[in-house]
Length: 485
Figure 1 (spheres, rainbow, N blue to C red):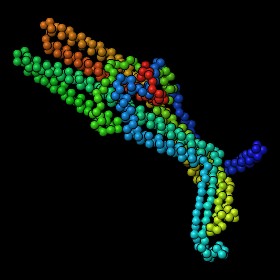
Figure 2 (figure 1 turned 90 degrees about the horizontal axis):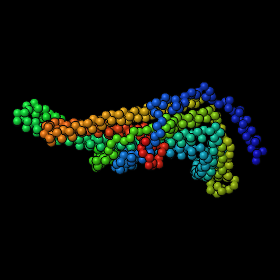
Figure 3 (figure 1 turned 135 degrees about the vertical axis):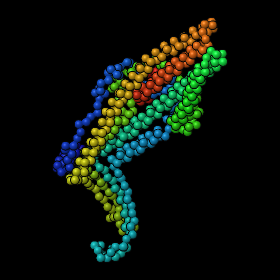
């Protein structure tokens, strides 16, 4: 077997060596661009290793409210944007299958019956000349293009890369959708909490107005104080009405994110997210390097680079000759009587060669375009990586800043609460006025509003940080670990 193969290989090598000088050349066309390593960008101070964990795939379930992950699950089933992403994955899979099939062998059966009158004044001699004849033909053919230069393999790899790109885009849409729902849900919780505090504030200010009216009647206050109380009360009532409108807006927003109508948002019950600020978040170790595999947008950019790399290989292979092997066997005869005779048999077999020699620069222009696509994909990847590192750094900086603000806000709230308790004790002992007591309670409510806003802002930033860290992408199995240590 080896003695038969060696001459064939030698003959093919001689033929290839003889024809290659006639091929069009891609000399001078190339690129010196490359994707950047995360270590290229300085981030040790902004993103220090803190022995934290990456977000789990079920990160939304760690906020103590079963309705939130249920809403996300519903959205992932029904949202039209995600349906579009799934359709793009299906289309990419079809292209991948088609590309793979195009490189394989092909077998065809062609059969025909043709009734024709032949001219008496041409090349066809009698007795066929001038007569009507029925030609019966059935041919079974097979062909196969040798992938000598790896063109088909590269095309298949490019199609697979684009399939993986579509899958990563789908994961990117899922993360964006999940994050938007979690943030909107957290905003709904904040608005409800602020509405409760606004209602308490209105109750206190109504008492202050009644007290002002009584004091005016007693001659202890002027109408100026009374009108000031009316003004403040009206402002608080306006804030309450605004909160009701904002709650309705967020409900409609959630309905749209769920892929349903606005009425679906009205069916969502009041959020019951865990109270209080979460512990200080800690970043995972080796974050910049591992982030490449944890964020779907970086995966999208990386697969795009890989696809354009394979496109370049395909474009280069176009400069070399195509070698096709073909064979056919069948029957061809006039009339049915001789159709099955051995003499009607037709057989053909042989190779075919296509060699681009001169094409006015079309192949070089095509290759230049592929390198331009590659350079653009590399630049997009590097930009995505820079943006991802900045995103994580920004989110963790916001969390830490809010932690500091929370300490001060908590101290202010505790002081206001203590002051109100002292005012209540003094009022009971007849050493303080009811007006001072009510004002102390209003101050407590104001500090609670600030504290609530900061706590909800921190949770929103924590959601943003989970998304910046990939939201569980690359870690699909549910985990019992906390969201972030």
